[in-house]
Length: 93
Image (cartoon, rainbow, N blue to C red; front, side, top):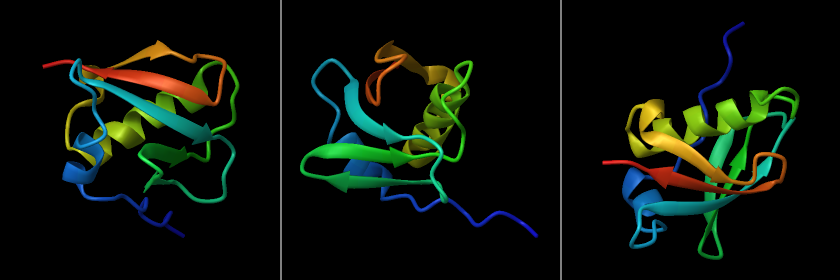
C-alpha cells in the first residue's frame, strides 16, 4: 500500500512566512501518523513520520519544507534547533 501524499499549503503561503533574510521559523511534530505542513498563527507547523533519532526527523523536515516550497532540499539549511521542536531554516538563493 502506497503512503498518502503529504498535505501541503500553497508555496506562496509558506514564502510569505520568510523573513527579510530568508529565514523560516517552524514547529515540528516528529513521529506523527501523517506528514504535512500547516500555516497557523504566522508560523509553519510541520508533521513528519520520522523519529527524532540521529537527525532523521531534521532531514525529513528539510525534505518536506523543500517540497512545499518547490525547491531542492540542498537550498535549505538548519540554522537553529537541531535538538528542539522549534527550528529555524534558512533558504539560500
